[in-house]
Image 1 (cartoon, rainbow, N blue to C red):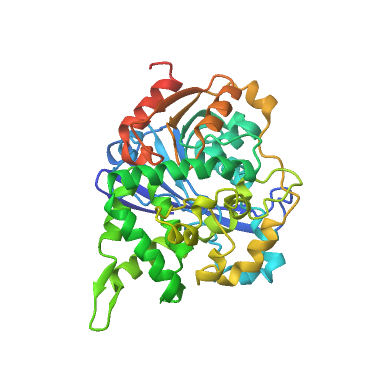
Image 2 (image 1 turned 90 degrees about the vertical axis):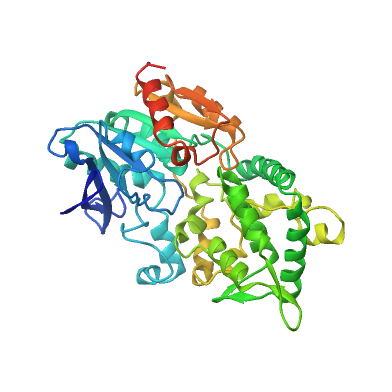
Length: 431
């Protein structure tokens, strides 16, 4: 282990060995990384543990600097483990460079089937006694991390002292089709709100789409397409996302000696925002996190989008209406335009057609839950359906909700200490 310091905090790199397939504990092993954080003033004390599960899937735990955001509040009373879930960050990363070590697409897909919340929770249960001596710990789950927390409550509640969920209460039984059928109207509302805030962006977006449809430029091997531009709407689910999208659009075009063209700055910004190079598992497993039973996810977002023709860019250009952005939807074309995903196209197809996903949630166990649980539910959350979240909240015995429109989906980042304070008060019956 290596320890080092940042302002107000002592950090320790921790590495753990876990089975790839927990049903075969003596089989292949992989490495999982976590960064321990403790307040400098309390480094020598015995403190309860809190494990943080990041959103995604496919993102490593946030790299904090010092005690920023919610971490400073947590460090007042906890020793924190910032866990890179398997396949992310420093935990045996899975990407176009490493996955060929598994073999061909079939072997890669079989390997990635072990990277959902059920495996992540079992990793946690192997790690926990090594850190706590067997004592239960508190879980803080953001977004997909909340999905993992609900799985934890379903499969290993004995390991939990309390559960805090921010924007991450999943439907217990919805198929991916249902998830996206509910998502597209929410996305449309977010786009309408953005255009109300920034009406000048209506014509800018139409001009950009028209340019991309005609020219199909590339930036560092990434094909810039109308669909790719529309996908920038994923920004609209965060607190500052609408403003970030507006600033991206405002310098889209420059005059050149020959014509007006998309600026290099815009093309680079679009490529960066649309690329999955830093989080390929998000694209590969995003629909798989909803898979339960024999029904394949089968590119649900792509199929369901056909039910919402208003999202078709060509149709928008043919008329005089606004171009609608999309958000948090993964499509087959992502694996054609993005060089970070292109080699994984067949692997993604095999995952989309898979028919043997284990059931993730145990309704009976959740109904008998005895672990203190509190969840922040964001009103009209773009990424997680509020109605589904509240149905799940009602299905988990004793869960207390804080429904708020003060924050968007990234409230635990934006609200930081206040959000964590509220959830801790709820699980302690102090609110």
